Image (spheres, rainbow, N blue to C red):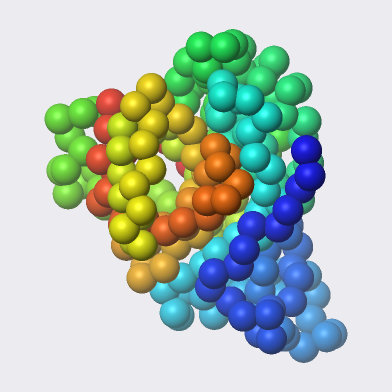
Length: 217
């Protein structure tokens, strides 16, 4: 399936330059080392309370590969290009889908490093608790600042910041690849529909979407 670049929604083309790991960053002195450029990127984005990673987006090839596709899109921000069918095999994905976020996390760690990713569950009755939302917000900011994407298992219907509803009553997996307003708003890469590959959502709404399931960060 053709690979397209997820649209950049934070930095303009005039103000970005490639940095290590496929992360878009501001132009800096040519003599700077990759580490110095990456540090400059994080410092600049934190000052403005926003950051967005560079995703090599692919839509899922069938209705039940959302878990492997979300993981594949998440890992693409690190410059990795892993076959989605190989990931599905590792996750035990069937036509019933991928069982839980706990089947995603080990595969992310295999490609990223031991215990880099950890699974976090949000119980249904805790989705509106401030501490759960604040933890999700902090985990998104920390993970994205580390140059990685979050993978979330969601279910039900949620509304993005443009007022569009996204409905997955049977469950779905998405990647969270950026944030703005210090994490109050998050950017989602969604493999389900390439015409809606990217959208933004309030983090409170995302927490409610994750409720009864979990995320890997």
